[in-house]
Image 1: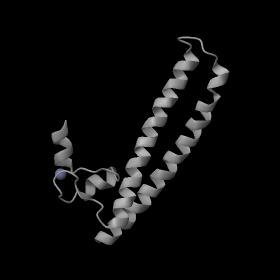
Image 2: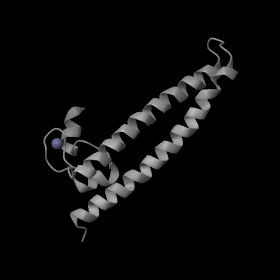
Image 3: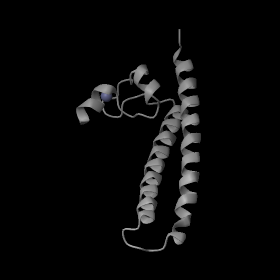
Image 4: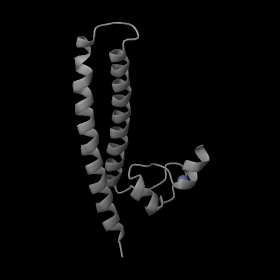
Length: 112
Ligand SMILES: [Zn+2]
């Protein structure tokens, strides 16, 4: 049987592992973004397209990182796993798949 403390410890471990992955991804993307100068400024240049794609990926990774940090902050404050919208506990199965989610599956579905 998993206790709530176990679930929190597991969520923290997962979030920290996920955070390390995103940090690695951001490192890689930042290195790629810094090489823009070598691409020249040709309009419609496939290299520019690639650079813009990297920029978009970078922004997404930063957003992801912010979500992870928010979830880690909630763990520290002891309020992790509560739905932002209805205030109910988020299903453990959902947290296992999406440890940084802020909404229970019902509220997440309603949003669509
Ligand atoms: Zn909810």
